[in-house]
Amino acid sequence: MNVTLSQQQADHAVKLDRLAETAVKVGLGLRKGQELVMTAPIEALELARRITAHAYKAGASLVTLVLNDDEQTLLRYREGADDSFDAAPGWLYEGMAQAYRNGAARLAIAGENPTLLSGEDPAKVSRANRARAKAYSPALELIASFSTNWTIVAAATPAWARCVFPDDSEELALAKLWNAIFSASRVDGGDPVGEWRRHNEALARRTSTLNARRFHALHFRSAGADLTVGLADGHEWAGGASTSKNGIVCNANIPTEEVFTTPHRLRVNGRVRASKPLSYMGALIEDIEVRFEDGVIVEANARKGVDVLRKVLETDEGARRLGEVALVPYSSPISKSGLLFYNTLFDENAASHIALGQAYSKCFVDGDKLSEAELDARGANRSLIHIDWMIGSADMDVDGLDSAGVRTAVMRAGEFVI
Ligand code: ZN
Ligand code: ZN
Image (cartoon, rainbow, N blue to C red; front, top):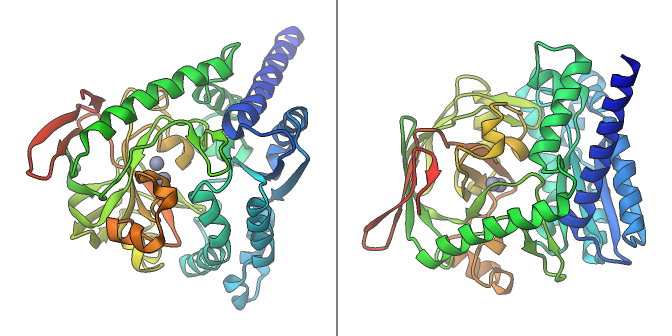
């Protein structure tokens, strides 16, 4: 019994260390002498420390850790005055933005409780999110445009594990979630860095096939979708590793299975239903169903969390339009796990998806050389938000359309056929 337990613990420690090493070497590609700014939930301290060790081993000049505590977040809803919900630590986010401008890399550990705020007043949640999004936007812009190398990795936390495995004891749920994270992050085997090199090569082959086609639009068809997503002029498909403006190759998401590009903000038409629940800032939105006309959501419904959804859509003009469209095969390892993670980092890699809000300038040919006006002219959307939600399913067909409307089969029954 003791032997088994300590073997499990030793196995966990080895994989946790591999995840930390993968985050630094594959996720960030941290450069010798580079600073690192890391954010993490307080329950992920062990992973944060291992990442710190690997970062210093890789030559980091300084690693700064900012911790977040869910209980402390809730205390604002318990005790905070009403005007507290319009406040955000702009000074902190401005400092982070300054660090990125000065060349610091950025690492976020995800592990938040997906339902933390689901019992709170949606109006307060939305005000707090809006204030945060506004204050954070200079930093987010630097991240979204890959001004510096960045990555997100996940850590299992008790509250998140309880959500994913509600029928298990907390200890078992945590162990199961860690195992799911290790396997989705491809650190199960002895050579995660090599494994990621091969995975990145496979994703690169997929993006170059799609880029060679120069589709004008994609048509999604399934029981829950009849949606035509026009693609932005000069769009470029991305996936896996990307080169940031400082020349460093990074993997922004660990895990990642998607290939994605920029929709045209004026050319999206039809209806679509979400194939998985969306956890947004601690609130759960289930069975989202929307209808688009000329790029704008003109009808929005949800079986649960509809108030939060509608508030999100009111964030700004761009919140009702698309900033990303992504293709993920139904057979992706995360989809095959059959788990619903209630976390976009995982669930978006289990299914094809669309994102409301801000577009990525890197999803354009020579995107980093285009001005805001040029990006606008090509159809890129702008917003304070960027929220992915899943539309892919086992019965989904996707066609690529050229400007004359000629169709090419891209996916059949959830799998790539192109
Ligand atoms: Zn995505
Ligand atoms: Zn996205």
